[in-house]
Length: 455
Ligand code: SF4
Image (cartoon, rainbow, N blue to C red):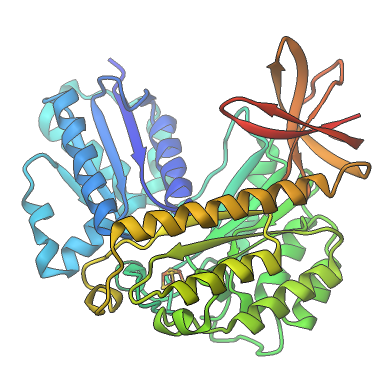
């Protein structure tokens, strides 16, 4: 009998990466993955605790899993488990009888072993393992806290986690208390994983972490004048099958003239940058305990635009932060327009117990947060369209990912180096092929959004 498992992931890209690594380790042992909506023998909820709502959703998914199969093994993993272990007021999760296994972030790479122990306690001799050889890899400690991915069939792009933890202590965020201080992954370990991904058909890497800009800052032998992140990217770019490298969210202060110049010398590095702004008002940024001003942020964008051709700059913004006035919100609107973001994730501030912001006076009413969110979304949609339109008539490069039919017409789709979605009418489809074409027009598909048509 083959055991089935299903994973539900909440939260950030690092969680997604770690879920992929967990899924891979189970599949290699012969477990079969099914959709979360189906009945499974094992359910894993990779939880998030970034807001009180994330906690609630995590609990809901754990209970839903138990309801779908009362006999299943239900595992809670990740940040909410860490928070419950450290925070008295959240401890009730650990006595929730719905859950059989609790795995904090540092234990995620042990989940397979925990599940197998549970199965063998429950099913004894009846438990069938499918590939006993692979257990050596786990017990020999080949997997690290950071996990590791090496087979993603049918994909062109893979996230690769190079860092964990954060020392920034933004006033609204619980993550530094939950994931702990910064830890960089060993360079050789990352390169080994990237090679393996490339051998398995991945041609685009996205480097991710909780605070990517801190990569290498925890190294004892660190040379203060060097950029460990750039050194890593340079080495990854030497892997033959890797055609493109992207970066996850960067801290604006990291982008100095030297950093931008060096980065731009790596050809495979894509000109798409995510710089989390959070607010376009300096007074709000101070209350958020962000460590930059809007002028410093604007300077980072200027440097990116100086060293890269038509780069895309994307961001995250929070509206309705405690005490946010209409004037401060207008500053955010004005600043977003000044920078001209390609895309923005807009969040209504959501309280998180245990953070400084949660204890601040002047919490903004939900209705006002919704209104501000709608106004900012409307502006950002226009900015996004402006950016896409700025490519019309220019030559773009697309990495082919899949086929698509729109209004009865057959296309190949993929992303440009700037991470803009494209379509082309090439007769033959070959995943991972780079093709070039001139941006002819914008095509819209109901439900999925816009594409640039390459001719
Ligand atoms: S940088 Fe700020 S928002 Fe991001 S994980 Fe660290 S504390 Fe949280």
